[in-house]
Image (cartoon, rainbow, N blue to C red; front, top):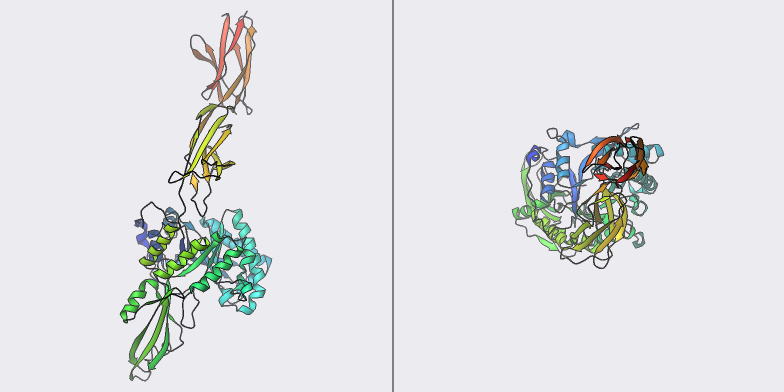
Length: 574
């Protein structure tokens, strides 16, 4: 990842931040944008994410790093020390309330080969898995993103063949643990290429071996040119690694990287530079960096003309900068540096966003949210609108909303697009939820007919809310119907003698379904029904009453419970 000087961490203003949606509620763009929110850039990145919430499904707070002291694995919190006046709960709640999935990033905070050696043993892998899982569960994150770049850029490529199987074993173990807890696993890595092309890329990350175990792959399709001037991430190179990724895993898992920064190299120096810049202002020196949002001002400040390179689908400009000052001996001096800058502008963002539609990717991922300029976000929004999934309208009705236990009811549902066109052959889940359920339960799956309709005859034992749901796909949003409330009245059966002696006692018994330990009433008819006894059913719904018949020639009795009544019985009194 691009390293920057720390920005001010004062984000207390977010407590009362009011966000205005970037576009009208309809139509809604596909949520293809995601990115990192660094601990040192909260006051910039978080508002930028919220202002573009219509495009963002998930974010990666860049807040944690893995440490190992030779005895214990720990996950260091980078956010809290950098933002002491704003508790971590505030940005988390803000992002959650905006509907964002939160998948924080953990970086490799160890020294050369330390993490590789840790993962080389079963105990080491287990300790790392436990530490990561503990963090995810303690904060109730939606998952975790691993950005372990030490393998690629610190350990050296001669170690990759050794590290690769340890990495794969670790990912499989972590994935199993996270999935058992309903959490997501994301990995962020540099590029890989199809081995058949003869170019492997950073093969230590073994995409093909971990494809089934990860839920997100975020590709760092930037930093193509670092030591020498050139594009940040040329489009052909970006597309090549995307093609390979989508050939070995579902495209919906793949996110291609966007660079919100540019690089600025010195290509030539004339004169003698002042002592304070003599080491940095030399041809071949490490490039300076700048934010995409500052690129136009940088170019304008030096009278440079920005051009768009159609081959690489990136912007570039050249300029000269004069440095005045003193030599190390105190003499006045001056030098003129020729410089060249490359960065991804709004058109470049659009070109890369178009790959989302072309390959049906999960989306794009920005390093970092907040670096971009407004024009770039509008380009992405336009692409997201052009590939937005169709809205699904659905409804459910029942021929009865209240019925007696054991009675058949008929459900019917309709699924259409927004223009009322029926959706045929659509898998539809029937889900129920009662007062004891924490979440919806699927009871069966139906398929719509050519008219977009489904029907289902069903028996229900208890009060239920019922809905129909179709899964979201690339073409369509998830469809969730209204909730149909169904009330189930108990079915009450009663057994009584047909005759009895005058003034004798008779026994009445029966069962209430469903009727586990509920109140039951015995009622007598004398012009109107009145209560004459009360009781409780047992754990099987059974009840018994003892009743004195009196001297009337006929006795009409019934049992009631929870709004239902049994069929009346008549006892002849002799």
